[in-house]
Image (cartoon, rainbow, N blue to C red; front, side, top):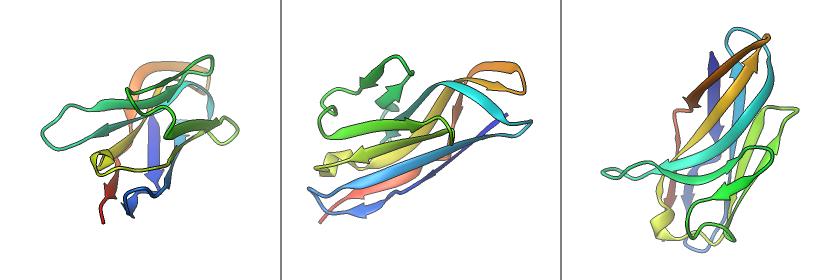
Length: 124
């Protein structure tokens, strides 16, 4: 019911910056609202972890990421962004866009939706 398309990943040197973007669209109609949009990341062999989520009323960051990463939303575009600064090699991961609580054509979908992910590699 919801399609998420991420972009902006790539290779960056330590200390560099990247901006990830994610656009949500409804497969059965236009999205009228999204409760929560956010970003998670995953390294092979490890669990997916929280990067940042924006529920509208509150923003939450993963441990040690606040101050380097900034999440923002554009509700007019059903988009969420992640500005990543001072990147470190340990930030290397696949970054996934997530939405929860989406209303499409008057119907509410409470489940999680995930994008396919975009790879961020921090290396010299």
